[in-house]
Length: 321
Image (cartoon, rainbow, N blue to C red; front, side, top):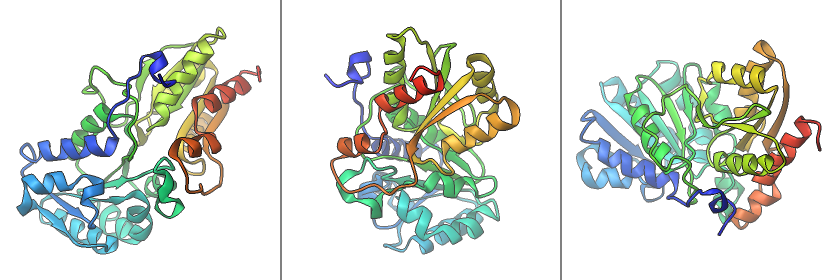
């Protein structure tokens, strides 16, 4: 039994798989949906849409900048255009096209970055998307999503297609614990999901770190500390009301993300806290460092992206370290 299972979290499928399944299913409900991929559909899982709707699937080859331009052109013709690649390739190689062809005209393009974070392991730093949320968050009016598990990835895929305007969603390759065993149909863009009540401090996490935050909260409870846990699946627009409530009602916040600390979830939360409800804060994420290639779990341990790291940061914020 792993540590997540010890608190009742069963292992689920990767968020990239859930996204691919949802996309293929939603093709019927969204007849104007077209998908553009950069020759990695077997990895992003967009190929499942292509198998069902070949006339609405376009593989432009390993040419991410052209891929985004094609998607923007299709959106200008009235389509919902979704384009996908590895998060590092999509957001870094095609950033100018995202900025000028998608962001500036407010094109109805959905960007999906697979293989986000360092948990892709042996593929190494060249393929680890660790700056994607920061890069896309600074594009005006871009929505940025980071689902925590398979059920939330399925729901946020639909919400992404329903939203009119540019959206970026990151997905991951490894299997992740299920934090929404009953389904995540209530998730709404821009509204955090409360997964655990608590008044002593708040753990705000996104993506794979949500399960780690729940484990950390269980560890803290054994020490008499009741931590609120929020799944901040929408990095932008961030749920300001939930952050302010966490700061004022619990007096301390720890954020956790599988992303660089600069420009990610922690930065977004800190901006709200500084402006509206100052409180003690702690941050768990990649601290100004690329990761090495290695076993995924070993990398998460090495770079402090664990429940233990969240627990330790919470104790520091509470003055009990």
